[in-house]
Length: 369
Image (cartoon, rainbow, N blue to C red; front, side, top):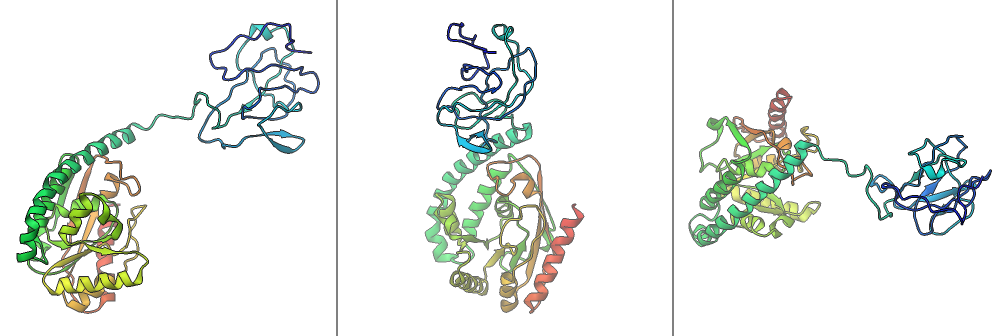
C-alpha cells in the first residue's frame, strides 16, 4: 500500500524531525527514497504490522563513525546519492502521526552520523559535578600561578646578576623566590603536610634527593620545602614563557630523553654540582606514574650519590596524583598532599642505595593504600 502520493498533503513537521522523508511506495519491497546528500544507514527488516509511524531521525554522536553506509545486497554503499533499493530495518514506533494513521505502517531505525549538521541527541552527556569543579579550580589555580609568576619573575631577574657573583651553584635567593611562588599558588587550593623535617640534612650539605613521581603537582609541592636542590627537566620545558625561564634561573638541569649524549652530560653536570656543594633532585622512575603505583628506579641518581659519597634522601609524595592526575593537568581537585621525608641513606654501592631507597618509599605508599 502506498503511504504517500504526489497529491497527498505533505506530512506535518515534528519538533524532533531532522530531515524530511517521502515514501515512494513501501509495498512488499519496503524501499523508500530518502533525500540525497544526507549521511545515514538503513538496514533491512520485517513488517511489524503496527499502526504507528516512526519518522526519520538523524542522530549526531561522537560515538558514531564519520562515514556511514547503506546496507544493500550484503554490500556497503556510501550514502552520497539516491539509491532506489535502500532497505529499512523495522523497529518499534516512535510517535503517533494522524496523517499516517490510515495507511500501512512499518517501523524502522536509522543510525546517525557525525557529518549530519543537526542537533546532538544524547551525545553531549553532562560532566560529573566533581570534574566540573576540578576544571574550575584548575582555571583559578593557573590564574593565581601566572599572576604570581609574572610578578616574582621580575625579582628573579633583578637578583640574578648577584646570584651569579656570590652564589652561583646553590642559588638560594632564587629558590627562596620559587618557594614564595609555589606557596602562593598552592595554599589557596591544597593543604600540604610535611612529616620528617628533622631528617633533612643542613641547607649547605650537598645530597641527592629522590622521590616517587605521580603528578606535575609534585614540583609545586617540593618547591614549598625551600631547599636549593636542582631538578632535572626535559629541554622543551625551558621554552615555556616565564615558567621555563625561571627554571633556567634556578639552575635546573636540562635533559633530552632517549639521547645518550644528553644523558651523559646531565650525569656530569649533576656530579659537578654536588662536588661544588649543591644538591640535586631525581625522580628515579623517569616519568609520572599513570596508576599511582611505584615504578622501577633507574640507577643514575644513585650512581651520582655513590661516586660523590653524599647521602641519598628519599621522599614519599602522597596525594599529588589525585590532586592533579597525570595527563589531566587542567584539573585541580580538592584534597591534601603529604610529604614524608625519610632518613638519609649512605653508601658506596649504587645498586644497594637504589634498592633501599625504593623499598623505603614503597613501604609508605603501600601503607597508605
